[in-house]
Length: 116
Length: 110
Image: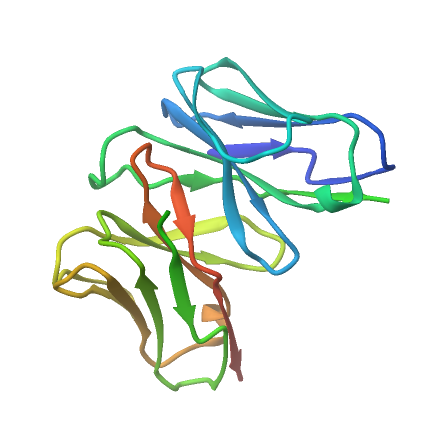
């Protein structure tokens, strides 16, 4: 009955491979996000989708492509993986609405990606 | 762009002690969120502050936002091992994305 679920939880892959991380939320939220947490635990926004439309695309290499088939899903596809892509990737969701109570973001458990 | 600075970076306290974590923003905060992260897990929402001078409490954790809305503090009273983890403050952006501070690693010794 997880609110925001990501799969897989761990992903080990070789350089140059293409991989996908899936995210699903069952909270009825209209906005979903991908964040990246580096080895120093610094968490940074990558993408944000509202109602399947891309609204934030931070300075992220073109090798990263988010895809939102519907409001409840936001997947992250990564092409030609590099060593520097190793990190923990978090999916999150929220309701759009500035700072109102009950609009906090809910985070998934994270996907630990290791590129070897 | 907005930057958040958290201090201290790490904190080790004896169980039962009080502690405070600070979060300072380079710009006025319109929504300030506190999250906790345990190793290998996702972020757990603690509290959100929006108004200058606002203060919220939940169990033994109290968060405050200063009048100028550029600084927030998180205070834990009578810490317990269950409080251990990484505490992150996050500033809300125009599209509700969060810009996070660098985090504070809290260790509580039994």
